[in-house]
Image 1 (cartoon, rainbow, N blue to C red):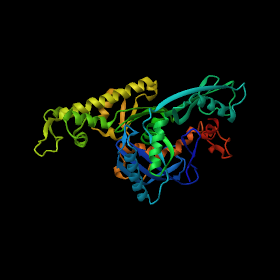
Image 2 (image 1 turned 120 degrees about the vertical axis):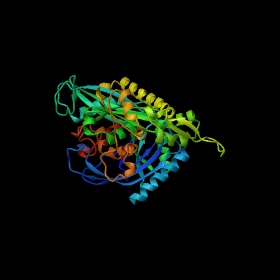
Image 3 (image 1 turned 180 degrees about the vertical axis):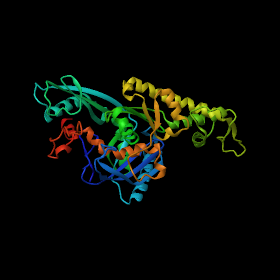
Length: 443
């Protein structure tokens, strides 16, 4: 049985995890570089200071990954190719876990991810705040966000206000004249999501839920203090670089740009006139975003493009490779810096930035990022799960691990806070009745 209900406005909606029992969760990270399937067992755990919001212990029991085909900048460009890679990745994970998967949580990097905050207020007339008032104000905020060409991926109440006093986490039972809410909506183009879902369906699998890539990587790579105090996670993938900003434990902003590690590779292939795969190898082995004194003297041999055996490799100074790599990395980071600035969330990010994703492993990247972003930078690896094979412990697997963590926080999207704000209207499931339930009815 699927853990997710489906809502009328086209987006699969997750059902909350039960804190009392174990679950098996399967996820699919469809990237431009690789496609990863992970299967995990979630077992209830005691409340603890470490990762306080996490209700379950996560153990990875199956993993499969394949080099991506048919995906360009996070967009499905070739259905057949993408479908076959998805099948291979899922098959491998199923074999390792010893079970079959029928539905998965899938990430979304393309579709022009957008973040919008809508504010709504309702009149209370001096009465105390009841569940029905919360429901009313959340519906009012949601109604502003509807657009036929875009689908809502995430809807998170980021804060309430009473009579203009902001920053109230749980207004239930308080008195006031006017109740306000700020709702953060992450949306993507419907068409992109439809094609993503189609691709998964063609592999005879169903989509349980969709999660914005930046949200997932942030969940996996950030520590609690960062999420609480304000921090940006920058996921540098092959075809896209995505940003998420967290504050007070919640996702407050996301963004994405269509530049990533592949652009560095194609720059090298063009600049040095060599094959894409040779350029990729040179990037990994010799590439650096930082110039180094010995670069002029070091010489790298570049394999020729031609099939002719008589073609000799050309020799180029390493400094040329560094210049080509550095130029593209700087452009990407400057774009990110400007996007953070333009978003208005720069003060919230403060000095904390975490780089993750496969392309974040490039030599010299943290130093270059420190200089361009003028912030403290660390490389974030996926945390909070056990059973990851050594090969999957690097930043390239943050999104996949974040998708597995996601079901535990999916509830935040529906309760406006951990107090189970939107508690008791659903079909008698108490605090598990979810906003999805009434978003469904109201749309």
